[in-house]
Length: 424
Image (cartoon, rainbow, N blue to C red; front, top):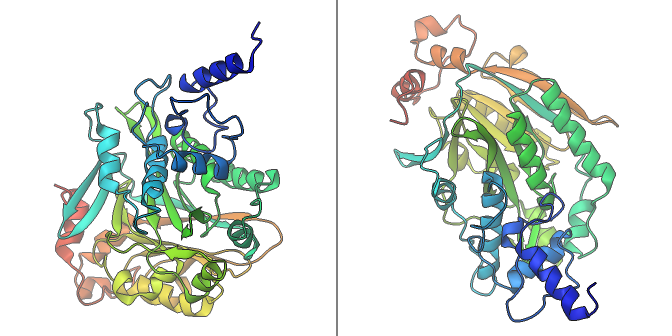
């Protein structure tokens, strides 16, 4: 029988150190939770609450590399990424706004001790290409989610410091969308900007890894000090040693905030932290090459033209009311880069679509807006057919499925993608 408060606290501290708690109910990866060695621990911390847990690891300057060697479970790729991101935000709060999380360090950490190269980063012609070595598909089934982000109320509740919306109905809606994508045998699910709370990412990534479903989603704003961060999460499943399912999670900090988003964030006394130094990654998954953009980033003509010849598909997550302007960008980009374009916006503004570089009456494989209920639509993109078309000359292209390729496309890069030698 434990009688004293000190004995109970010592037992509680020892239990936390064993890392035996259920990691799926803890709001941050359990490997970056520890008690300071000079006391019995703060008994008021609720580790199932993201705000409490994140403040705790920041206040105690806990590193993502501390005390994980004794974990009683296999350290998954998604846990490594989330731990590294959170611990990289914390130490910088009193120095500057830049974060230390980098994709290369993340991939190196995954491979530490594993000695296998299922996941790697290649640098070619100034491009950073994240390569996941799994099966090759000529066609991909892309699911786009027609869901309501909830106008600005969810953003306001975070910035005002109120308890954010974590209703079970919101979680159930997300779970239903993911399960529907799996039932419909989608290869990839794309969700809007600002859609998923950060603390739900571990469960989301774990599900994606088990089911082999890639997920691209906007993440609800993360606050630290007076800084606000808008991340996009790119969740790509793979298998360690071709047998152990997991998912790599890559975080992209928003590079360009819209004037309206800045106005809201700064109106509550925060600074909208933008990516300043990092280069945008190009992902290769199922042999499909694609970059990911977050809403207003598409307004930069130089940014959206960066991956001409390289991209088979461009993905954009949005929370955007200016659908006419962005609709024009989508239609021109699909033709100018000669690739598929996947755009997912909140349902009240709509224009979520999959667009291909074909004649106008056939260019939209999917387009959707509105509805009281959430829905899921799936379109199939034919990567093999697109590449084979691109290496033809104009005489062969003019009566083909797609519009003729624009000036400047590099046929050599396309041939290397077909031959599988682009990353060699």
